[in-house]
Amino acid sequence: MRKIINPSQEQWAELVKRPAKNLEELEAGILETFKQVRERGDAALLELAKKYDGVQLEQLLVTQEEITAAEASLTVELKEAILQAYSNIQVFHTHQAEPMHQIETMPGVTCWRKSVAIEKVGLYIPGGTAPLFSTLLMLGVPARIAGCRELVLCTPPSKDGTVHPAILYTASLLGVTRVVKAGGAQAIAAMAYGTQSVPAVYKIFGPGNQYVTVAKQLVSKAGVAIDLPAGPSEVLVIADESANPAFVAADLLSQAEHGPDSQVVLLTNSEVFLDRVEAELEAQLAVLPREDFASKALGNSLGLVFDSIAEMLDFSNLYAPEHLILSILNFEEALDSIVNAGSVFLGNYSPESAGDYASGTNHTLPTNGYARAYSGVSLDSFVKKITFQHITPEGLQNIGGTIETMAAAEGLEAHKNAVSIRLKEVNRV
Ligand SMILES: NC(=O)c1ccc[n+]([C@@H]2O[C@H](COP(=O)([O-])OP(=O)(O)OC[C@H]3O[C@@H](n4cnc5c(N)ncnc54)[C@H](O)[C@@H]3O)[C@@H](O)[C@H]2O)c1
Ligand SMILES: N[C@H](CO)Cc1c[nH]c[nH+]1
Ligand SMILES: [Zn+2]
Image (cartoon, rainbow, N blue to C red):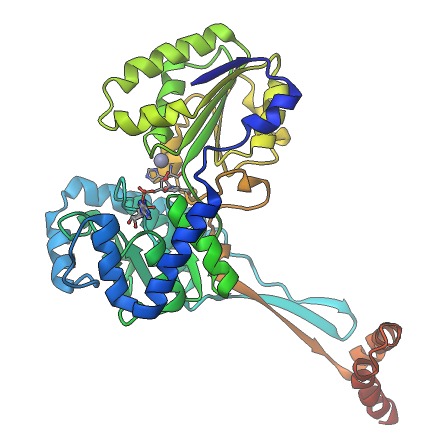
């Protein structure tokens, strides 16, 4: 962890940059993958699974037998945990539905907006370093609440050609239409362009590593929608001396273990506290099974000491973390100052893992500073909002003049005439 005491304002711009691969090289490789998938469809997916996932697949689609066997192999404890998380995510996301209001903007002019489900959605479930079946709940539950009809799931196969049973169990709970053994940029291309086995979808959802995230951003230029850039996980903790160094270290490691390109950041107003957290990091890291990823991620990470909580909040807003943890005594006083963050965890007993799995909030969140402008996945992500309007003859008499004047000022006579021709008739009657 890189340690800096009172970083200057000039250093801030540098410090908020995430560890990232060379974008041009990444894009060139991904575009080549897209070309192969577009030209050769399933054959390219099978070849790329061998190249990147190290497995010679016999077929891309998961069979019903595989799903049945997966269900039977899970413990009751894990199934119950999945069902509890499902229920909390469902409750939280169901409450995001907006009531539909019909608004009369002028007498006789009525407007309203209706949420309509996106019919075909693609769900990318990461599987390179860990089988994130929790991500399937985060995407599948709101998709089902919204009423999406077709759910296509892509996830990288493991080396023996299987998909983790908890992913298959969750897919079955959600009634996923098709589960495809494909990961990385090739999976994104398949869902965007379609192949013999993978139907093209209208919007692609889901987090992933830098290959997946850049691939999503590239296909979004080609006409398919995406949810948001949700790349390597990150957490920023703001802690004062009221915080528990062991808890803070545990939270930092929880995101560091996602992979070597993750970044974790600690901001504190006490150098002594920072030293205590560093000692805890060392002790806890030594017993982590994913020590290799976590220690690489810690190598990218920052421990910064500031004079005041206000300054830490300013830095955090510039950094715009995916996850923000406020482990400070008076966290309520800080809430109004948070303007850029994906999801926020308050006090000493709200571990970030709660949001990852089961509290009910969505864990598919903007990374790499995108929380300055993007929200995480929500029910809204799975619907389009279609607006409607109905104008009565009296309504047209009320609003017609305004439209005619504006259309004439833009020099668009046909627009003006679409009103005038009607007004003539209305005024004649
Ligand atoms: N922001 C969020 O909301 C959020 C949520 C969950 C997970 N995540 C992040 O998702 C990521 C998951 O990454 P992952 O790697 O475990 O799984 P992944 O499924 O995203 O990526 C695995 C795929 O990457 C491709 N790949 C790997 N090396 C490659 C190479 N050299 N060239 C081309 N393609 C290559 C392969 O096709 C492989 O199937 C982690 O970084 C994690 O932090 C983010
Ligand atoms: N922390 C990840 C989002 O950045 C989500 C996740 C899934 N499983 C564990 N964690
Ligand atoms: Zn996590």
